[in-house]
Amino acid sequence: MITLIKTNSDSSDFRSLVVALDADLQARYGEQQSFFSQFNKLDHIHHVIVAYEHTQPIGCGAFKEYELGVAEIKRMYVKPEQRGKGIAAEILRSLELWAKDEGFKSCILETAIKQPEAIRLYEKCGYARIPNYGQYIGVEISLCMQKDIN
Image 1: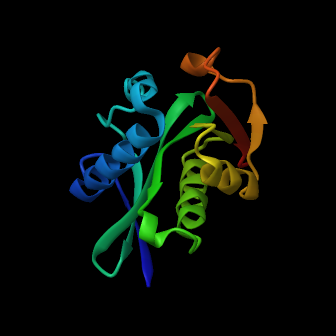
Image 2 (image 1 turned 90 degrees about the vertical axis):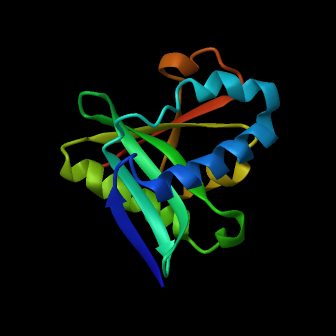
């Protein structure tokens, strides 16, 4: 049974999952990943969801305010052996509902071209491609997406 727990970036389970996420991204992108790492600091993220199977953390996601009414989805990850079970979609859906409860009207996110499984997930969950925003403008490997949640 999968349980989703709301927490924040102080969670040791969240932080351990992010270490695995960062290792996965480093393997995919090599030196290019250092550019993205500067935007993925864990300080003061107040909206984090960790997925558990029994007592084991198996996935996570978070959101932060990007601008008034817009939440940015961050740090989505599911352990490789747990993929294909709909866990990431559950985490994402829970983040969207939480963001909506907090008054956000839409969610944006950035992923990259070497993550086809993430792109498929976001498209399946109703996200549409948008022009790259903020620090991702002009970054050729970035792909930005948005979904209205109101």
